[in-house]
Image 1 (tube, rainbow, N blue to C red):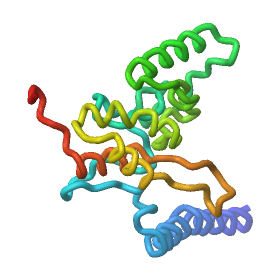
Image 2: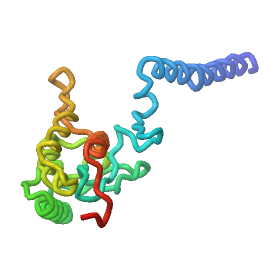
Image 3: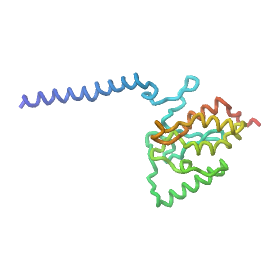
Amino acid sequence: MMTHIRPALAMLVAMILLTGLAYPLAMTGLARAVAPGLSQGSLVERNGRIVGSALVGQQFAGPGYLHPRPSAVDYATMPGGASNLGPTSAQLKEQVAGRRATYEAQNGASAPADAVTASASGLDPDISPENAQAQAARIAGARGIDAAIVQQIIRQHVTRPLWGLYGQSRVNVLRTNLALDLAAPMPPAGAD
């Protein structure tokens, strides 16, 4: 019986070491060598401080910032996910109608689909260029700058589809908001 158990245990230990230790370490090392920023979570720094990840959406409040897509999980990464409300759900229809009314009141523009619907993950870092441009006038007014400046910053942060084929054009909310802060810092609260 030991003649069968000993080789089986040796193979088990070898496979655990290979697949649980050697392979993950090799892939991590390769990823860090080939794409160091991506392998570390695409963290975005400002003044030596990590302010977020370009791959995970986060909430931006206030009229001077580009607002992300709605999130069913309030941008929490652990329970990330959708609301699981179907297209016939009265609750979903109420949510979308409420989001549409709020968006249109804040921006004075028709709400694109991605402005009123949450994504499957609830953590999308990007919005459509149409959504971003519709928010430009609100942002410009809050920052006291010309809307053309905001529109130009948004255009500079549009990512096109991979090879012109895969995906859609999109605007990263975090990176665009950081660029807006550099170009036209928000006036202090209470300053007129």
